[in-house]
Image 1 (cartoon, one colour):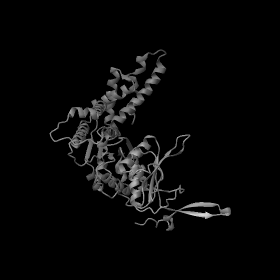
Image 2: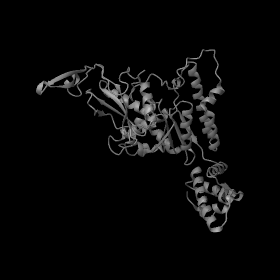
Image 3: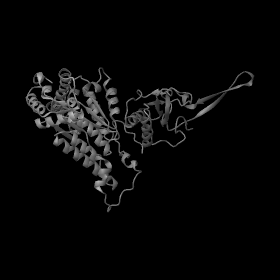
Image 4: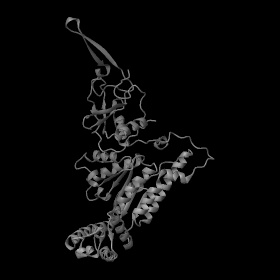
Length: 318
Length: 140
């Protein structure tokens, strides 16, 4: 089967990639049964879902959606085995939410997950912004955008702050051209890549209002809520565990108080602010150790004390 | 006469899925790929026209296939080949090169004998296709 589809041409045959993996199986007879649990295990979805559960705090709605998508793809694959084929689901997504709510992290997981269930061939993430897609002079945009799209094929194209693509105030802006190419590819090369747009909620709404075609081509609009205080503390613990640090009881209290205060300040960036606070605590921890003691044990080296969260922390803007 | 140049040229035409597999093989070795086309089938014509720049940083074969199809769309009656370049030190050469598209009619070659001094003969391969100007050969 020759696939001669150019951008504008329909591609009637489906990508046979899935079935060729295990040597073009015969369709199962109608009265056969398949073991769902075994299939699940073979696909390795559970590991990804479990690691999503473990490493991402909160985000209940997002996790539910990921589960649903994984289930759909698995069931589709089983249907395929029975020779009941359906069209490939549209998996382009839009992540909206405030800074630091985990949009990029989830996008990365999404690539891996879609790769596991056989939807994507590689599952890598290509993360771009306006600069990478839009050219500087006439005729520069199309090759540039196509270049990026080619790199993303087989994986996920993650466009951060997608609303910058469209500048309403300048009708000769090249962003419009990039959007048009993007739309074409999202429609025609659906087999090859998944596009995920991300941005702040209100500005994405504006973007979709001015580009209705984009909105309708995206099946999954997922909103990332802000984290609660408890969730932020949990995130902090996760981060510290990765860096092999721990909080003393008092330090946790101090940190909680600091977060509480910080959450209501402007430019609070959820998990990103937590990370920055941790980085500063590590700095202070190190200089405190050097100043205070000559002898220290492993415990001292790994434990953060309230003093590490003190100082001008509350006044810090990050 | 069917041109046999590059890898796989004695095999039946590769299907798109087979091309995809070959491209994947090249990518797995870390060889960037490029697409080239020409309408001069002479075996010593090494420098074909480039279809866009070589494709670096690709992870998946779909990008190459997309370019191949674009090129086929623009030049349905040209020769199109896919090259994979191995940039590793010590090799630095084309690692794999195969034809993915050819004209419907390939008129073939004529052997010209040129007699020089002392009845010596020099031979020239003359493709019938190049008798027409570039771009005008292999009209459907």
